[in-house]
Image (cartoon, rainbow, N blue to C red; front, side, top):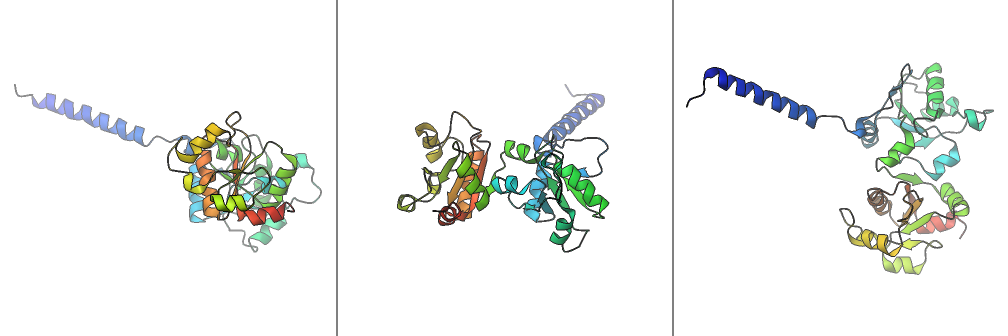
Amino acid sequence: MIASRSTRLGVMVGLGWLFLIAAAESQAPSIFHAVLGEPAQRTAEVSTAELQGILASNSAILLDARPHLEFAISHIPGALNVSARPGVSLSLYVSDVAEVERLVNGNKKTPLVLYCNGPHCGKSKRLADELLTAGFGDVRRYQLGIPVWRALGGVTEISSEGLRHVLANDQTAVVIDVRETSAYAAGTLLNARHLPRSGVLEGKDVGEVRRAKDDGRLPMNDHNTRIIVVGSQVADTRYVAEALAREAFHNVAFYRGTVADALAAIGH
């Protein structure tokens, strides 16, 4: 039987709707495109995906609005930090706008993105308001902040000062040395565990990472444990740090310097 023209038209319309629905679903925003969306804010927010793009293109300066030691212990790679405004308490902490102006060589049109300790932290909001009042014209916030950055698999970076502080004060921190066996055996940080970069493969629960989960090198009973990755090349340390973040470890930082730099930083 030959279908009537109206029947064929109905089928085509139905298929058209199915294609439109499928296209809409394929373009639905993911959690990486979410923002906090608070009303009546003076500055726009950027999502995690937008921040990743900004960092990749180097199209804005990323400012960590937290106190310097917090920044040193753990910050989004590529972020910068300026000192506190003189005379403010820790509870009302705000970075020094004059320092930001010096950072951008007086160019108040420089695009800036601020972040702090997440949705309930007011540091980036306070700094954003002060920057706007001082005449800066392109200020945005990643208000989801470092907690959401970590939760979505983002690694952080630790500086020499932060490494020294953590190893002196956090006995639960796990240090992972990613150099090959001969270099690791020649000397490393006290209690550092060995996870060679060559054994960290693409994919989940494979290679040396799986073995490290099973033999206790990785903290399987508390995925919030601070993990610090050290090595000889930043490409290797960051690669392993990102691999561990994809294994649901939520507090992973890599050290940009070498193991020798790390030993010098902690006085060894």
